[in-house]
Length: 320
Ligand code: NAP
Image (cartoon, rainbow, N blue to C red; front, side, top):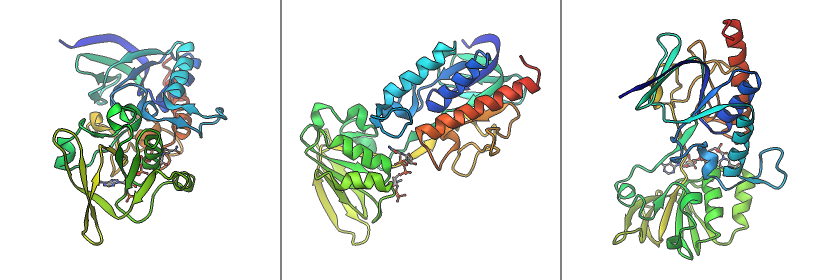
């Protein structure tokens, strides 16, 4: 049975990463009494991608760095301090055709005058039958969640990707594994110079350029990873107990079912420099709008902007 939460909310924020939580802090301090719906889209838990990140060294205010989950915990505590209300549900469907807007989870519906979407992005997975076969049997997309498991300790491991995440994951895994093969499909990393410098100083990590996964084998767990050089076609066998994916992200916009305007990569289009979307009264912030910067601090900054835009919109509409 579908439960109607009947109360019409002034403002609902969907998403509990740095953008959603920062929007909540601003909206709550403005006396808007926001309801934040925290879902499980990214990494199977609320809090977004920072929940599966290790040390964050570039968030201002933490000169010695802070662990991703602790940063989220602290921003959430700040939002709670100003009476943000939280519910844990994945929103599966929206209806923006009439006002107030309707939001639907599997069992509940909410009505709201104003909406901030901060649903972030989720890790991509290689589309290869062997990856499906060995998923959870040595293959993961989260080094922080799985990297320290006994099965990977002092064993060789592969990381796939050439961006900042791939290098970060490789660095993290090198604490436990005996050797890391960082497999990248091109001859140059996409990662920032600072990240690449870290890699150079880590003797446990070996970069394998111009290479893709050809096949994976093992009796019940990953044991051998066949890697193909895309230039020569040569296949190399790597004895590895694990494979960690770090090949980018997809914005969490499927639940919107094209109810508002998205770009060609399915990120929500906002009317820069504001956070307004193509639907009047719906604002968006953080990684769900941002294929370019994707930093915790830029997400938090746009969360602030979304709350300010929403506050102004509510006041202009006389919804107090
Ligand atoms: P990304 O920058 O999009 O990099 C994805 C990597 O995966 C690229 O090297 C890409 O190869 C590769 N890739 C994509 N699809 C693939 C496929 N099907 N097969 C093989 N390889 C594939 O993603 P990210 O590393 O997750 O970073 C996302 C954003 O977060 C970036 O803006 C990054 O700067 C930021 N970030 C920052 C930090 C930090 O500062 N501490 C840490 C993590 C992430 P190509 O290069 O060939 O396209």
